[in-house]
Image 1: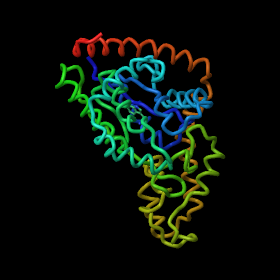
Image 2: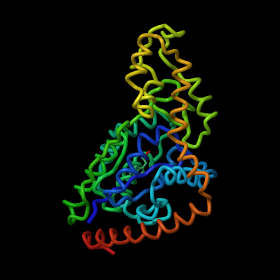
Image 3: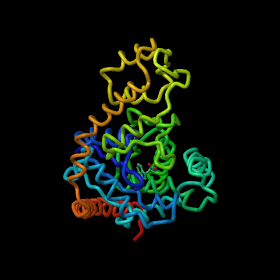
Image 4: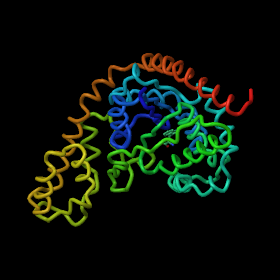
Length: 323
Ligand code: TRP
């Protein structure tokens, strides 16, 4: 039997190129060798905003990008966390298996509170990784593909699995973290992370002109003011993008930037053109997807996910001798 993977994302709308290299690309390549489950973490999104008016639209926008990127819904079920009630059931049981102090120490929680300027922490923030553990273990996943920023959550998942298994009976694997190729793509403004809330993104669905407008404004080496000034590719955001989307030309670009013969405007034009070309098939596939198609895919995925979830909860109840 194929090993299992659970991957998830919060539905924050259409995805950007950072999501692609940090997650999606990896999910797509893993689906050949693993049984994948793809989760829309719509409960988790409530930890950042209580406004749910955009939830459905954001979910559909995100799923279009998943599918356009190559996630095959026939192979791997796609589903919303809120539609499978076993997530909350397992979350409650798991909340008894980990101490409050352990959750308060979680570095990912601290980072999130800082990055998103969260003013008051709610009970659900502490429980965030516990719910994530339920997401993963409900499908008895062997591995979780995530960026580095998520590894402390996955560590908590393993601790909860161990605690359950040693207290009752062995039901859960201890899932391993599968780190992505580029955990973090820097934003256009040179900040460490590309993120919608920072407004420093290139969307997967952006048309070539929008990509150019975004890339044109990107921060490069501040010491390279005009062509012929020698540049430092290793501190340049645009060079990082060349490294991802234009691998063939990287040695040449490095030489020409360092010697100065390549100016930033030409380098950016080339970069924008490469990104546009790279995602041209994505844009085409995405444009062919309708909301109705996505809703049907979800319904099918949710039925399949529900069967797995029910099976796991049977094992949990048997192990715990309850229900
Ligand atoms: N916390 C993840 C993020 O912010 C989203 C997520 C929720 C997730 N449940 C998951 C990721 C389970 C992997 C596995 O990106």
